[in-house]
Amino acid sequence: MKKFIAGFLTCLVLMSGFYVLAESQQWTALRATFDVYVNGKKFESDKPIVAIEGSTYLPLKAIGDVLGVPVQWNEKLRRVEVGSISNTKNEYSFNNPAPLNTIQTITKESFLQKYTAEVVVKEIVRGETANKMVADANIFNDPPKEGYEYLLAKVYVKLISIDEGALTLSPLQFSLISSDGKEYDMPFVVLPEPEITTTLYPGASHEGWVVFEVKKDDFKPKIVFEKQYDGTGGAWFKGWVD
Image (cartoon, rainbow, N blue to C red; front, side, top):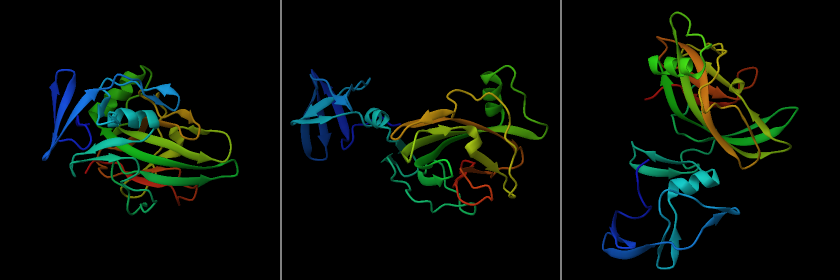
């Protein structure tokens, strides 16, 4: 994440405050002398809170983490993306999986519960780096089978709503589909930290690793979250980096 104050181009430290230049306008940004509370809890950040002409400015990434809203830097487009701006509809599918860092909103209904969540695959790691991460996670983890390697996906999930109780998140809700359309078996390994397994109540979010085993020569597998037993539905993502 690039270091920035939203809306400002240049920031210079002057004495007890900041001197901010943006195009032809100039402001003096003073370090806040008061506390900020978010949802009843004191806001803490290693970056300063500043006040400019009566308005309070908080570090964007830090406040996003507190509120459970994804904040990410899109290097390709050279912009900061906050929340669900990349995609909020399930327009993606098996034939058109979503790129990394694309937010999909999925509603899952079963005889037990109905919930709506946002899902993002943020990072893909495979090959020797992934193999070492799995080996380091637990000394009893087996190496991948001959001709295979581990593929790790870092996934972000935010529970928007649920009709009752909480959502139990586990690796079993994810599947890896080969580039020729076959579902891979899930490996039985201890996941690297942070692992995806957790329990979410409405408004809560979590980010963690899911581990798959993939053929070494399969360069474009697909990841799906919460597909139906017949293969329909679910949130589909690319299991590779473009």
